[in-house]
Length: 167
Image (cartoon, rainbow, N blue to C red; front, top):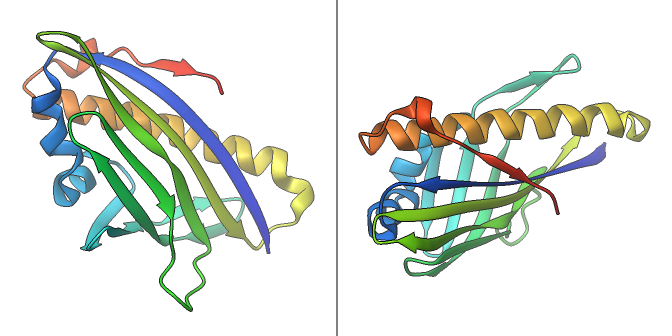
């Protein structure tokens, strides 16, 4: 087993206030509905257990489940860090933030910084190709999340503009 990691940082200026976005991204059921590849999110206090749908690539299929410790700064920031339950080994995990920045009375910048790590039964020398596939999947997932968010807010999903940022 080798561990593969990819990071995606993106931002979108959403034409609504933070108070409209906040309840959507802090509700595990809604967040799972908005986020492609996420089958379900189960909550146990500050720990959220993410169950992803099957992901196929390089001749293997994985259905990661991982636990994240969630920290909330109301209307401003969600931070998450991989926190498997005591004594359990999880082969996937994430680190990152969702940050809301007020741009005006009816405009909010939503910035998502996500690093995903996953152990796969592939040789470490395949890291370049594997991590490019993970990064591309994360970017597509982010675009679909933004489109789903816009649609849920009653906005035209075709007007979504996502800025890909670099670390």
